[in-house]
Length: 513
Image (cartoon, rainbow, N blue to C red; front, side, top):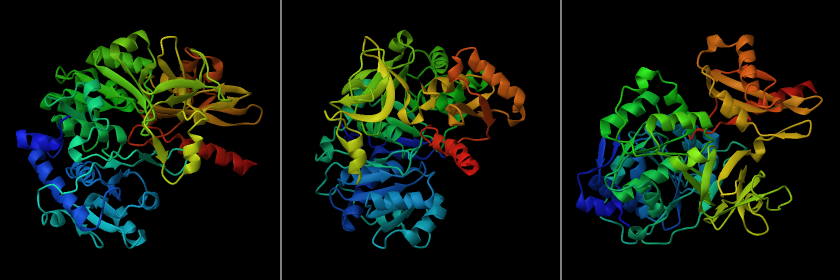
């Protein structure tokens, strides 16, 4: 397996990555030299193998450089969501025991608050400018040599869960304990699955602090390809970039595809997308009609995976197989799938239960032995608490998160199917379905819809959407009422922060009681 250092010698002037809007180019030689300088800085301030740092930055030209430096210095590094508030960021920095915190001038408001509340021994550094309490990253690394640190060891990320059901949890993988140039963690597997090589041009549309885009970017760097990093996602811009750079690979979430499909026909057909060979997607369920339309538009190049940051197991399905098994997320490529009932018994094909994997990568939740233990069964199989079933051929189908289940009159209802149908309505931009209190049945089905035009909302659209559900779904799965909202709380990975919507209805109920 190759690595960025090799490419810095064989193709020093080749772009390792390009920032989409600014056009800034970082070559493999620049990446190599600056990552080495940063690694020397880490050592100089006392960071040793297995020490921890935290990174809070938007997508910018320093992000991959700093993470590459952490990998070379054998550190655990934690990218943090830029959508979190200061108290949540403080929690993560303290929870992961970061000895150094790197942020950017763009995040100066949160950074200023954090300078006053983080422990005094945490080193504070800022890129693209400085404020009081922070040292300039650019000034610091310019003082160090561009050669590798003498004790290079492969580091790895500690990523945090989205925090949709409480405070986020740090996910600690096994430490590679390998020399940097022998790093193979997930790299070869990714190159083989997605056919990524030195000729690949990868369009990264999502925030770099999220696990899937961040890890895929590292795969591309090891393969010697070029990354086009979008500062933030825009549907029309993403199509333009495919044509401009001859993009061969990209990765998105269903929300991105939905927004592309809801562009006008003229906008969708404006650009030449013929260079695209692979479109990876996961992180959230994709409605069958949406995927059908994407395959019709882009061709059979979509590759869907199901996995978590924990990497306890994974499935994958290519477009050709998906067309024969519509709705499936594929068969296991990492670990073995087990579907268990509420008593821990393994279920036969066709019956839905909690999805467990055996034989996947090891992980634990940082400083949370109870949550780690909760994710295992007595046989040591692990779960992310998703629900699903397998068919006779071993293809996995997701039904929902166990925590999203609605119990109405003793009947278990999983809202994902309702959401997948409602989002195909032409007036619906996004939708969330969940249970709200009902005096007789315990819960009833509620839909909250983000329309394209708020001027369309009202009783008529509510009835239209409920009737739209009744045309396709059983009565118990259809919402009894629909509320409208201008924007949804979502993680940048595309996952709906459903708890923030649902809790309001339950809090209101508490006030009535």
